[in-house]
Length: 409
Image 1 (cartoon, rainbow, N blue to C red):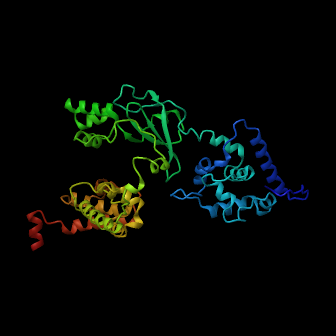
Image 2 (image 1 turned 90 degrees about the vertical axis):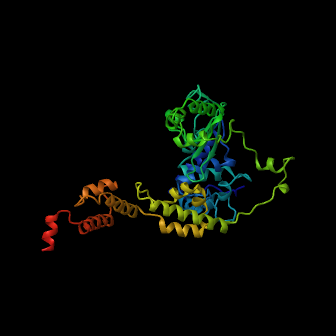
Image 3 (image 1 turned 60 degrees about the vertical axis):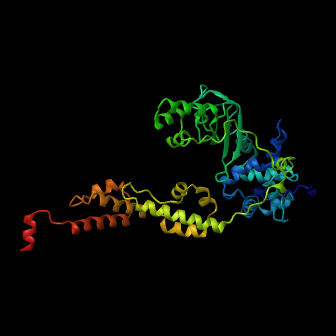
C-alpha cells in the first residue's frame, strides 16, 4: 500500500522518536497470540473517543475535530512520510476507522489512531482487555427479592449495549425465573455486581409473591420492602395491572430477519407519520395546566418546576428531553414556568412567610429554616427575605386595646 522510501538519516530528533514509538507498537502487535480485531475498531475505541470529547450526545463522531488533533499530534511531515495523511481524501482512512467496518484499514494506520487516543498500543491492550467484559464473567446474581435464590449467582445471560448519552456499557441480566434488570458499567468492585438499576421484567415468581402479600393484608409499604421495589410500583401492579412480561428476555431479532419474515411483510404494515404540530398543541395544554397546579398548591411544600418534573408528572419525559425542537409551543410555555435555583428559593421564602404570618415579628432564622435554605443563598433571595419580613411588620394589626387607644389619641 505504501510507497517505498529509503531510510532518511537527517530526520529531526522529534520525528525519529515518534517513528521509534510506532515501531514499538508494531513490535508488540506481532508478538500477540490473540490479535485484537483491528479491522473493526469502532466499538473498542468509542468510550475513549467520548472521554476525549470526540463524540456527540447522539453518538456521532466529531470527524473534523478528530482529524485536526491527530494531524497536530503527529505532524503532517510524519504522516506524509508513511503515506497516512487523513486530509488527502474526502473519505479518509481516519473516518473509516471510526465507523462500522466496511473495508480493511491498514494496521499501521489503526496503530496511529490507537497511539493518539491511548498513548501507546500497550495501554490500549490494558484498557480494552476488560472492555469486552465490563461486568465480569458469568454467572451473575439474581436480584429478585421475591425468589429463593435472591443474590445467588444463577444468571448466565447478559446483553450488553451502550448508553447513547454517556457512552458507558449497559448490561441487561435475565434470570430463568423471569426477572431481569439492567445497570450501567463497567464494574469497579465486586460489590457493583449486586447493584440493580432498572427492572426490565418481574416474572411469575415476583407476581405471585405480590398477590400473596395483598391476600395476607400487608400494607403497600411493607410489600414494597419485601419485594425490593418502590411503593408506587406495588400500588400500580396490585390494582390490576400485570407486569409487562413474565418470561426472560428474548434475544432481539435483526432488522434483516424482521423484513424477510414470511408472516409479516413491510407492505402489510401502514406507515404512520407523527403529527408533531397536533402533539405539540395537546402537550402544551397539559404542561401549562400541570405548572399552574403546582403553583396553586399552597398547602404542600413547594417543588421546583423543571423539565424533568413536568415530564414525569404528565408521563411524557422522553418527548420533552429528546424532541424539544419539534415542540416549539410547549417549550415556549415551559420557559415561562421553569425556575432557576434562586427563583425557586424565593418562592419557598414567600411560602414560608405565609406559614409564619401569625407570628410577629417574623424571625429571619425561622424563615430560612422553614424555607429550607442553605447559608450560601444569593443576594436576590436575601432581598426577598427582607421584603417578606418588612411586609409582615407593616401588615401586622394592633392586638391590644392599649396600643389601639394610644394610636387613636
